[in-house]
Amino acid sequence: MAEQLLEQVRDVVDGQIDFEGQKLVELINTVALTAVGVVAFLVGYVLQDIKLALCIALGGTALTFLVAVPPWPIYNRNPVKWLPIGGGARAQPITLVVDEKTVG
Amino acid sequence: MHSSWMRIQNVFSYFTTVLFALGACIAVSDLLTPRAPVVNSLKFTNLQVVRGRPHYYSSKHEEYAIIKFSLDADLSSLFTWNTKDVFVYVTAEWPSSSSASANTTTNQAVIWDTIITAPSSDYLGNYGPATLKKLRKSAAGKSIDPSRGKLVLKNQRPKYQITHPSGKIASTEDVTLRLHYDVQPWVGVLMRNHNVDVGLWKKLEGSVSRTFTLPSLKKKDEAKKAKA
Image 1 (cartoon, helix red, strand yellow):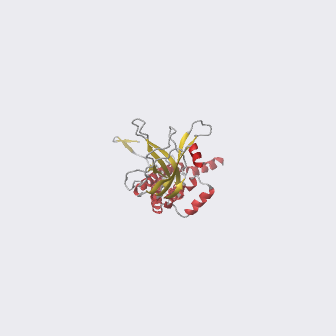
Image 2 (cartoon, rainbow over the protein chains, first blue to last red):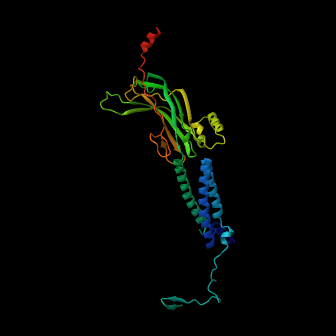
Image 3 (cartoon, rainbow over the protein chains, first blue to last red):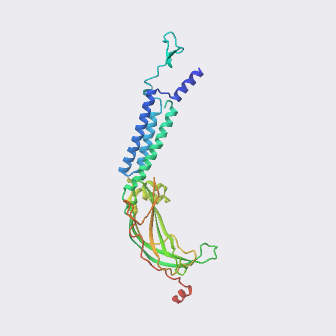
């Protein structure tokens, strides 16, 4: 019981996402933070308000953290399909070719 | 980016890069803003030389010059979104006495200074509660307040009484007053006034007053004689 609970806690803290999700997070991170920087500068320069620029930069970064860090379900839509454990009866015999010789 | 911790690290890492770039852009934006500070008038209004001691227990007697002055300057173009505060000071300058061999150094002493804060840095200023309230009220709804750069002082008492390391300052000739300023930005390098145009930044016009001579020391018995 305790072990199962620990397992669940570990999953939440780890927050693992799949490979497609990782690609998406990387893109969101780069685009969002760059946009935040540009918007902060332009708004600050036009309104001549450096406090506002800082607030936009920090607020935008906080939002980016919120979007990018937790393992949202959208990042787990393409789970990796593993081969069955131990091969099993359905597993096809694998032929490997090494140096033009068939192995296995 | 497979675990939450890894994603925190990645987002924070790129955030620092963006913040640095933003800061660099803000610092460079200063160069694109024209500055044209000008001193309309700077002149002494009252000169006095007195004898005194540097501190109460000192047995050394020195001469102190008290230079009252009037100033009319417009430094409003120094206030942009990146200006944290402007430090303004007035110095008295005079060449070393010619008797001291081939010494051509210039003596320079600050007689008055002030810090003009921007509305974004009012809370950092060394103000009393009443002054702070007044400043905040005058800048309400404004992110920058260039009107604070307009300095008009009439017959201003100096903050500092000046002397010379030798202790002699009476009857000094060729004394001039000069206005200086330092602009402290939020991001970037502290810039001071310059005497040549740099890009869009004009030099400080009319920062030097006309030359004058400090009065001689008033003798005590002479004053008594005048009274009698």
